[in-house]
Image (cartoon, rainbow, N blue to C red; front, side):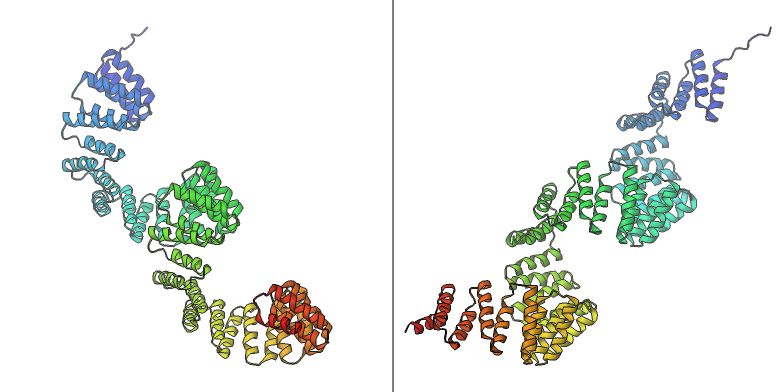
Length: 631
């Protein structure tokens, strides 16, 4: 029987080191444990601590480093590695104490300065971190990692130009340093230098083709350049490399939204929510995509979910308010805007939309107060000036409205609708020439917008420039062949020129497009009357009344036409119907009374004037007729 060979602590230590180099940490620890039994040496505890750290057993590792320090109080590496283990546990303040101790025992320990800098960075103490990295670089001028991490600390402080200098140094020392290229790209993005950032990310991708983060960052830079299709390609590559990368789906969804591809965006947000069910922003942005599609109920559900997950989310309340407004739920929308303002008192857009909603409710003065608040918070808010102008116009305060439109236009010279409404306000003030100038601006800004030509035609009509007006209406119809208002107004202009046959053709076009347009039948009737075609005119008035039984003017004109045709009883009947609809119409009483007088029905004539005076007590002509009748 052979003798069993005994092993001393040195051979066990060396065997442990061998296993450590092979990455076999459990066997490493077994060897070190045996060695410690024979001799509790500082180096053995230190190396055992390293193996435990590799296994993520940081608390056990710290105990070993403490034993090493107890055996060798000036053991700088043990302090340094204990600091690293504490940092892994998020105990950075204690880690900093360890690095400080390591530096005290070994003032030239570059890794201790570097690690101490990293802990300061994690604690947002970036100035102190930079001092540590500077010490490390002073000791080791080719320390690429120290330059890279110093750059990160400078970037955290918003000192992006200095950060880029550091990244350049790191890259000069280590040309294949992918992290430094990536961080340089981030700093360039912060400076809005997206093309240069993309070059950096391309370099990262060249060095590490399977690094998903580089594609993500490149996609983000492309997004900022408005190159959404290329950005989406990058996000797709990220997803291919890392199918559970939430940010890639999220950013892809945002890019799809920017392209107006809202259905696809919604699908991406579904993926985000599947991966992170408590991601409030994903619900919020999905709600915005639904809102863009006009699916306001679905949008409201998304905003509710976002608010449930994040009750202090002002943007979610804001967009929920917008969706509710689109659904006509104005009071609920106001509640949402109020909540958004409560959470974010300087939320100019929320004041603006609250004003818009109050305007929809007819609460114009309150709306104006909101627009004023929005403008105070955001003085260059063109839309707030414009909508304030709309509310002022609704109150017939046209001069102030025009001032608002002018301010909106000064801020946004291509603001076509502001020119349109300014023109309308000028029209109402009888300043038609200035109105025409506004509409001409609209047609310059939006040459394919039929309404600009229509409104210009309307202003020309008011000036009696009917031929020019007709040209405008023709242009509007050319751009929008279904533009019934343009046919209507062209018909009026032709009628004013005595071109009644052509006017009738316009009204026929309207009727073909909108068979239930009572005004078209009425106007056609008027043109037929002008041509002396009284029976056909009556037929048109009948059609107008069939569509709108309360069309007072149609009864009036029908009665007048029947009078010309000497159909007195029918004329009396129609004036009677008109009076029932509009008892304040003095002309109806005059005309009905005149027919009764012609027929010798004096008592009925007198009763007609008496009834007219009852509803028109200040009408001197009716009073005179009653008095004369009595005499």
